Image (cartoon, rainbow, N blue to C red; front, side):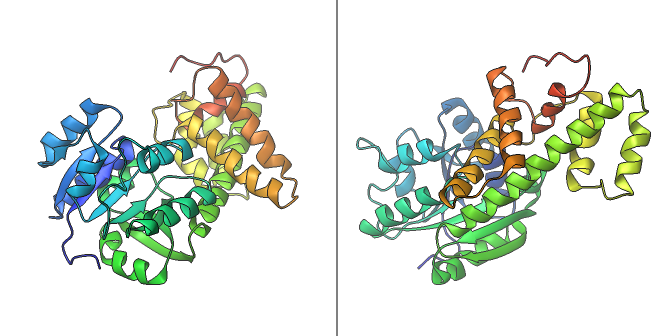
Length: 300
């Protein structure tokens, strides 16, 4: 059972994790411990919000009732939960782990079983939002796991979100998030090609974007990324290498079912190109650098 005012810890305090921790601290939730691969990031955030920076994961688990993980990929999750020398599951009986990264469904199933073996609990809370929403507590969260555990976590998650959807058993939230990001990435690539072709035709791009916005070419991506593509402003809100990773998660799901997704495959190939060029740390809008005529991709 999660306490009514649980002690909270965060593993992974990059752009998203740090702002989630700030939000909870700001509204009076006790964030007691933080950890990150970059010890300076953990130390700086800890000093800001009055938490303890932990170099050992087992110490972080001991300091909290609920532990959020916001890491990059499956390999990072296996490392923090299953490393034989130091991991989050050491001394974790009775603890609850809320895993927020975009991962494969299988890693959530594997970690749920590993946690259960030591008397701990896991739930997935996949995020369909970005940095400003993490900071303001208006995330869109898709939750997968046991209905009872969702009920226990719901009061805390509601403090962090504007939209909270229970998807179903463990693994299904990861499936939904993979599809959300697959469609978003396809839309981003399509917008980049439309604006790039418009530039090649010599059209006024502000006019073109305005026409897109009032027709069937409109999309959420046009609102968030259109001006950035035109102005070559690629400050990171959602990394291009994460877009590549997430596209491949969706493609793997499709492959397991024998489905062909040519648009998703083409989009993944474009983001792979950005990563190969060393531009994976730029925002996903940087895919426009591959489509606009005469452009040379900028340095990260």
